[in-house]
Length: 409
Image 1 (cartoon, rainbow, N blue to C red):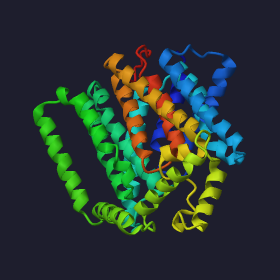
Image 2: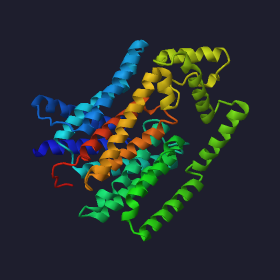
Image 3: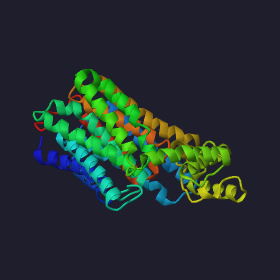
Image 4: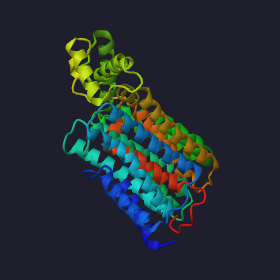
């Protein structure tokens, strides 16, 4: 196998993970490298055949794009609405490139560690030096919190890989530090929706690693985690206690007085609006322009709070798909999530121990995105889409049973 293409894909994957939050448009660097590299692959015609799992992922990437493209065309939405779905197509040539020249495993785990650590440290700097109420980096607090949490959790998935390395202690220490800093960075954003999947992910990680870790280390790690979470929750500078209190107060305020002029109240009102107008166009939805127009009508009639008028999505992935693309759009979204999750679960059960950390990471990516979608239409944002689809094809490649020998592994 040629050396240069492997170095090229390794650098691209490292930069994709490491720069995702610490520079403006961070994910674009690695994505651009993978996209340009795939052009060379097409010209040389050196692609390898895909297995059933890879073909399934390609199929749902295409399905999601065509569902979005068809409903956008049907509703005469602007060309801008094709931007995020088109990123699903970009992941396909990247998959072919990585299938032919898979990156070094150290590039992926090193990139994830660097990305999580950088995200957490940048968030801490914003809170302490800039006195920012919520850390946000070069994006908004919700997207920053989501991706920082994802990178932190992926560090924990890499512990099984690190344990088999010659410098195991060093890698384990780096991954654990990256996990703590990345998750802490998510807490500093105050983005409560980023935390939804954390308990589920911790249960999955415990079920996988619990039996292979001695009780002494497991108990010590658990006590440390509980103490750290308690300290972060109690620290007023972190703002977590205040955000949790706000969530309870704002929820009570919405149901008791109908106050939608709050973060939680606005979300609940947007969800109610979505369920209110969905039955009027159930199969193909309203489209973005139609959704905004219908919402303005309801506001003028006094049926919906005016505070929600400027929001272009429903702050829920599933309701947003249902309202804008109808049942067809929701089925396309669920098919994508369901197939991707099933592929990684199946790989986790059948691949060798060396590839299992990547399959585990794929499961955790999907669990997190399913959770993120509860309070945010993350797939309407470019960095949310690119993080998901390119992370999937990277992990899909690395989790192959027959991955060629890599001295860097």
